[in-house]
Image (tube, rainbow, N blue to C red):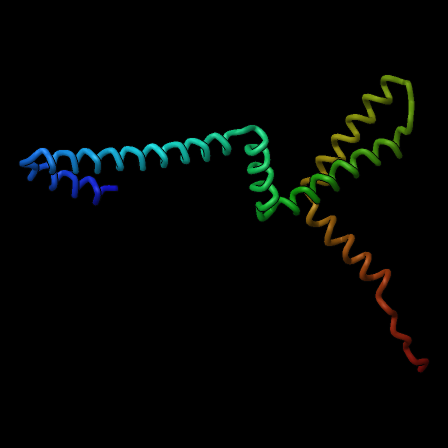
Length: 142
């Protein structure tokens, strides 16, 4: 566009007849049509990108493509599950409000501890699984 504008300025500086003026007017009208078309296309693209469903899609795609998303999701899920099951194991189902409050505090505590130590817990689980499922070599009697 900038080159075209420089060209027009150069032509307009040299206009000496009505024919040259008409040519310059036609060139300016063509430029206006082209810029109008480009503006409409940009508006459509901007409008589509600002639609709520597209905002949600783009945000979700950015979130999922984040490098630590799967790790964070696993850690959060592990923490919440551990807290929930510890509450159910310790308190069970009860209608006693004191026990329910105590269970909620227990759940929050376990969830917090597990989330802070999730890497250690995962490595411990991996070691346990390796230990349980590894083939034990038979040692010859001496």
